[in-house]
Length: 83
Image (cartoon, rainbow, N blue to C red):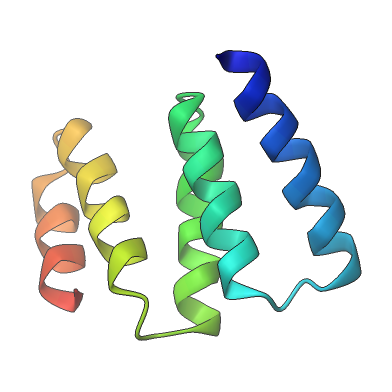
């Protein structure tokens, strides 16, 4: 299963080389990193997704979930409230 997520990461990285301003690509790349447990990179790309599309509720929720899993509860709360 990890190979599928690694393939997804590679594909989304290539897509972002063509168009770095796609919130959908950043969100999907973040989700692949999240599934690979690379939470630092996941957060970076979820953040970029909301910078490009402030109405991306799913990205805020995903960031909140990551922060909650890390016991960073105040940051999690902020993301949930944004959602």
